[in-house]
Amino acid sequence: MVFAMTTIGLVGAGHIGSQVARLAVAHGYDVVISNSRGPETLGDLVKELGPKARAATPVEAARAGDIVVVTIPLKNYRSVPVEPLAGKIVIDTNNYYPQRDGHIPELDNESTTTAELLQAWLPTSKVVKAFNHIYAAELTTHGQPAGTPNRRALVIAGNDAEAKAVVTKLLDAFGFDTVDAGPLKEGWRIQRDTPGYGPRRNAEELKKDLAAAKRYRDMR
Ligand SMILES: NC(=O)c1ccc[n+]([C@@H]2O[C@H](COP(=O)([O-])OP(=O)(O)OC[C@H]3O[C@@H](n4cnc5c(N)ncnc54)[C@H](OP(=O)(O)O)[C@@H]3O)[C@@H](O)[C@H]2O)c1
Image 1 (tube, rainbow, N blue to C red):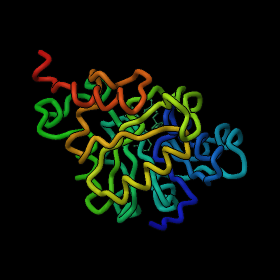
Image 2 (image 1 turned 30 degrees about the horizontal axis):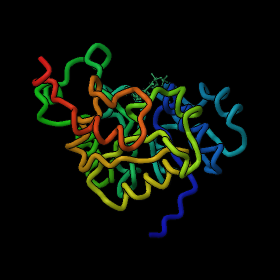
Image 3 (image 1 turned 180 degrees about the vertical axis):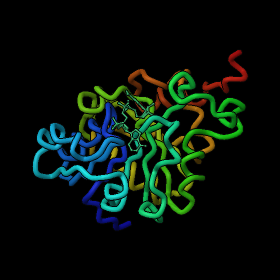
Image 4 (image 1 turned 180 degrees about the horizontal axis):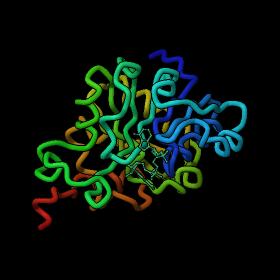
């Protein structure tokens, strides 16, 4: 598989977005970051990230990215630009917190999952769920070189095998093993309140956590 990936676009530059940008720049990628308030509000972060970073609008960041990370409060997913992301790999970090996002009936009744919502919004993009179960601060402190015993692993899910292979390589470069939970519809196995959500886990532990995960309806 040949995939020349040099620029990572970010829609969202908060806790997770800024950390993914730091990781990306540290590993030689260019980044284009964006938020809801406009590029002029991202000056400090761009300054910290240095010459490989620039700030833009979400549309520009989506257009510029070879891979684009969507990392915003889930409730705003319908504002993610669709056309500039057509055909691209889109990494979805988002989680559902009703107290922040309001109630989304199809998530409350568990007829879909967070990343499937984004995939439905971006029908021709290749959505891969990733980075949703690690605290933002740990992204830049828990990474280790490939082959390190007991290396931390992160879950991915997605419907496109090639896109998942690209994201697996990216995560490896960033310092993490990967556990593939399967298609997007299996992403619930790493949602809020599941065993793997939050704690540091190696790949074997994380696989067990995914297998042990329960739907919210079975937790009540
Ligand atoms: N924090 C964590 O440790 C963590 C871990 C894993 C996953 N997550 C999930 O990842 C997502 C992001 O979390 P976070 O903690 O990084 O959130 P955050 O710190 O609140 O940052 C959210 C970012 O999204 C931007 N944004 C909001 N609405 C937008 C829109 N419509 N278009 C473009 N940008 C928009 C915000 O920009 P403005 O500030 O300009 O509004 C801000 O830069 C959430 O779904 C969260 O549940 C978080």
